[in-house]
Amino acid sequence: MGTVLSLKNVSKSYGALKVTDDIDFILNNGETLGILGPNGAGKTTLFNLISGDVRADNGSIFYLGEDITSVSPQNRCRQGIGRTYQIPHPFSGMTVFENLLVGATYGGNMSEDEADPICIDVLRKTGLIKKANLLSGSLTLLDRKRLELARALATQPKVLLLDEIAGGLTEHEANELVDLIGDIKAEGVSMIWIEHVVHALLSVADRLLVINFGSKLADGNPDKVMNDPEVKRVYMGIEV
Image 1 (cartoon, rainbow, N blue to C red):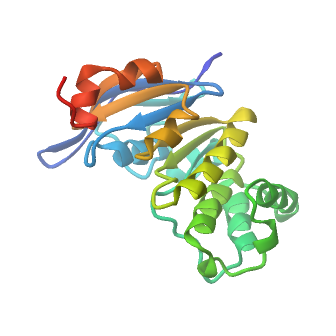
Image 2: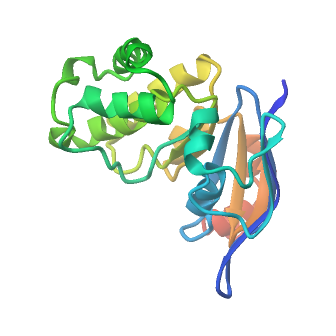
């Protein structure tokens, strides 16, 4: 299968607060890794460390066998690490298509001629093709979430980081998004998905990682992890 991404003893502190504490895990090629944890567990900080938005205090991050711990966020993106953000921040004065074009040309390091057909293909896949010429600031929450995902896909990532992309959606909308993520998975993109909508996450994830207070609590088969007594106690508030 092969490892596409690995973290070795990665830690990050803000003053006395240790947000990520000696985290160690791998992501295999084509795998979807789900991440669960209570609020404040350090999940988004973990994404910021992988994407390069935040620099680790200790430890190393490897991508396709190379140490990228000191690589800039823009170069990590150009090498194939794409991400979405929990709260979509589209370029609201630009059209949907222009948002993707920015992702492809700057994040994917493509020429405009290379980017155009890729952006059109991504718009079709994400159900946004009919809204390509709308200003992104006019979109509904579901379509902003789709655009957030589409903009990341326009960079042609090998690894895609999804940060609570189903949050705030109705059950029907979340199911639509899950179907889309399933299609992306079928194309072989490796994914790490942070999500509180557990049923959505479990429908796609091959493996679950649970973190608490910045430390790894459990890592493995989703059914086994969800039935772990300590996971039930910490994440679901169930005393076992």
